[in-house]
Image (cartoon, rainbow, N blue to C red):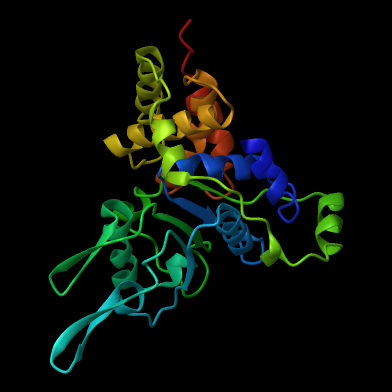
Length: 294
């Protein structure tokens, strides 16, 4: 399965095979994705191609400082004294929340219920979102002008976060020579809802779960403050199952946990010292310090 997905996306996404696999695992695990990087590194293009490749209904929301929550969720309009609900762009299978941290706090909080409950509440009425529902959000570095830091409660709702890989000279040259329109990517015939149900059937035994708990305990010992919750553990189990499924395994091994845990933790570590390679730090101070059960 992952081979056909990579083959489809590699026409336009260069040098990021691992991020394609990680993103697909998060999606079929039912999680949302946070892309963190400098402007112009391909975050939006990456998210859009993933959505188009899956053939799901897709909407892009460009966040700005003057947005209102109704611009996202929708609003009630009275016609002949009768209330009519006008759906906002949130009513789609995949939402690309572009530059999420440029939106004001009110708009950021409007996303919370949708991401967790898969529904929105407007004027006291709850409206269910289409299923399946995923958010792929992009975020600019918080030191840039015009950005608002995302609250911890919202960060915790993202299953994983990552940045695009830095391209070497040949990969950059390949992108510059591209002539194809990225809108013309083939839509793969994948039943996402069925796939998500099959992922839930992947076995994750007690030894692997205990290993995940040990990684979490080790995380509490590092020098930086970390956002840890039961949701963190659940996300680790879910995406590990999804990665095992993509690689045609019937059970989770320690390998899936070690590959995904750094990306689950990346946006949950706060106040990291300037210049620290956060993924390298997680690998050295957490993954390598927890022995694999034998």
